Length: 95
Image 1 (cartoon, rainbow, N blue to C red):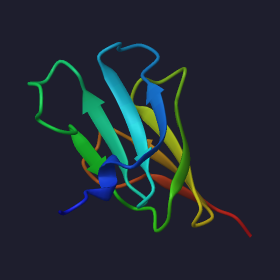
Image 2 (cartoon, rainbow, N blue to C red; image 1 turned 30 degrees about the vertical axis):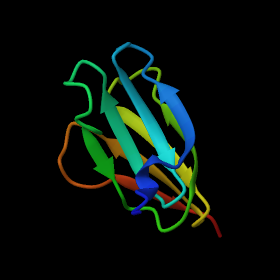
Image 3 (spheres, rainbow, N blue to C red; image 1 turned 180 degrees about the horizontal axis):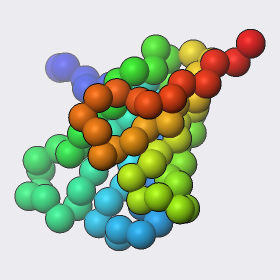
């Protein structure tokens, strides 16, 4: 059968301010945002898929509820501003 690699989680972080929200990172480079108040079985609220390789770590900002960092094996760290529909606002690249 078909395996959805978005669900092969590598890291998981509960939101520091909103107990019904969490983020997971996947081995295919995706970052998934979940809202547990949504209907059961509805899947992720949003999928962020800019990384080219496995996302090893994700971290919510302690100061801003809408900022999330993700670090991946593609050598990049991305700062996501979840208030905007576009992709990440800032990308840091390892030299």
